[in-house]
Length: 417
Image (cartoon, rainbow, N blue to C red; front, side, top):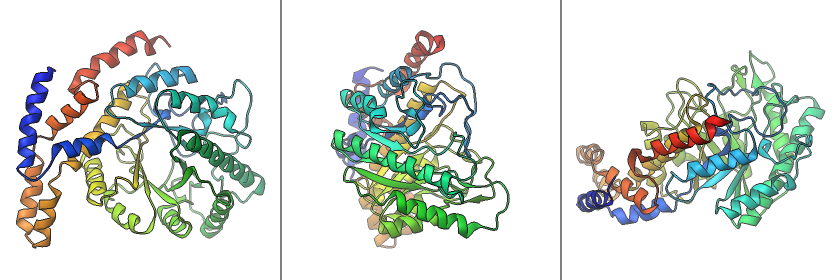
């Protein structure tokens, strides 16, 4: 797309937005400051580098068998950098514990150390990409249906030690990069059929978490993530939304809201304003559920758009961390990264361009018709011209221009794996 056309479209858009009291330059500046946390597991279907050879388990599932997944740390890093080259702005990378560099050595999860991620720390520093982290309770012989809530003290202690070590790794990452590493804790614990011991398992989970969080760190932040159900764990989830909201508010932890971890009729955006009143920050895992937590690639749909708007309306860009969390193995994985990340950014762009001052004035004056009319007319304002300018200024492809480049990378690199 010719630069002259983009600039002319932006000039018109800037004037149009100014008429409703919106400064497009300010919106561009604010979007530039938002870093998404890209998820490493999209590139390899959540397999990691432990080389256990087992299938993905623990209430989650990857569907599809598109060729070209990353098979080692070198391929994974190359794919992440390639995807990032099409995404405007500066972004973070979220790692699961199973993506450590173990050098062919059998390192069980209760023995993992900072040294297994030193290569990632150095690589991230070299490429100006800050790291986030996740403990990994799934796809392991001791996973079963219960991990941190397991009545067997040997198994429960194994996962407690694993998570403690993950926090230490996150602390080292945060200290090195001079910015807190956000560490997310999610366990799949639950039951396929009905249980009569709900309280027991939740007491065990609470006590396990208290032991895990005993040590205080300065360079990492703890998040706890709920889920409605997992595959094979449909009837009961120990770490439910109610459990983790109660735990986080009582312990000063961050709540993670995964957009696929709620009933299809729930609006995740509506939860933000309540949580932000009682928890220090909120972590988002953004994906696209289709009838269930299927982790489809994020698109610019109503749910994601409302989520972005609510962040801006709550003036919470500095308190809400935005991570991506989908793993689609049915399409080009690099393309999945790019489509999902750019779609999330497009939603944030529209949120930042909303004529919020005028809308709030209408609401304060009880002008319901005027508020509704302005909300509707805002949908057709030329936000896309501002988005194109954002891409242009970040020296990434504008519009659909990235598609042939992704196809070329597939032909030359990933298809030969």
